[in-house]
Amino acid sequence: MASREVAPSLGAVLAGGQSSFSFELFPPKTDAGEQALWQTVRELEALKPTFVSVTYGAGGSTQDRTVRITKQIAEETTLLPVAHLTCVDASVADLRRVIAQYFDAGVNTIMALRGDPSSGLGAKWEQYPGGLQHADELVSLVRSLGAFSVGVAAFPEGHPESLDFEEDARVLAAKQDAGAEFAITQFFFRAADYERLVSRAAVHGCTMPIVPGLMPVTNVAQIERFAALSGAVFPAELAQRFAGIEDDQRAVHELGVEVATTLGEQLLALGAPGLHFYTLNRSTSTREVYQALGLNNSHLR
Image 1: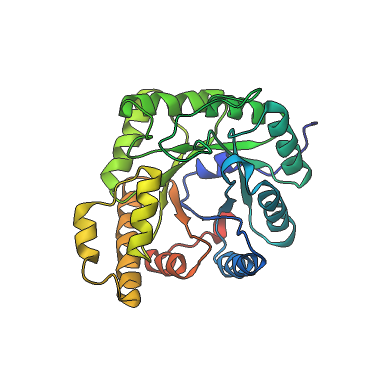
Image 2: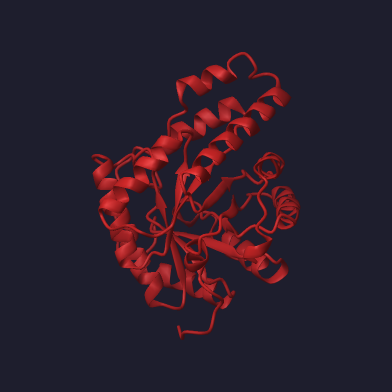
């Protein structure tokens, strides 16, 4: 693919010293779900976020929808779309084809992820025949195929397969060395975990912006399930605060917004380059946290 002129990279924007504010969306499996997604997109667009990311299902299970939705966001909204891509169940030739689709759609920012094993978290990772083994290899591939800005994942509480936090830091630095310009973390609930990640990564030469990912609690059982699936920890002290109100949806919502707002304030005070929200394709909680934090990204657009 030939190079072409593009706007300043997202990595450069995130490194510019002004706090970013962004959202993560996922491709729904039904037409009704997709209608709800576009409603959320329009609601979030009004906030003028720095970017929105669109996830990529395990084993490419949502590949077609991901590419199409990302393309529509690029063409039909004022939002900057960031497309996800994983190594799961894909050869290098498969990956090149998807990268070409993004390029042709005018999408120039990609989150390059190894991805979880297609058989589920906890299963042994196995390299797909003709595929890639690590995320840094995918970063290198994407960067070799066009003028892409590439982001990667980071794990404040440690990747489930890592031996320790030092290994996590070394891996993150290796992704930067391969050409990554920024990182977005898995969601977490303690600012100290983010502070430790940034500090250890810096020791290994990692200087790229690391954007913390937050997920406001709107359903206690759901957030506990997501935490278990991702390897994150739902702290006991936080679970205790939600104990007794699980069946009161309004109370859970209000406390979830309060907790996310407090964490956001702590992270920005620590010098985080911005905040990235896992929305689950719903905008209400995220918009309320945005308002509570007094964020405004209009100067970044």
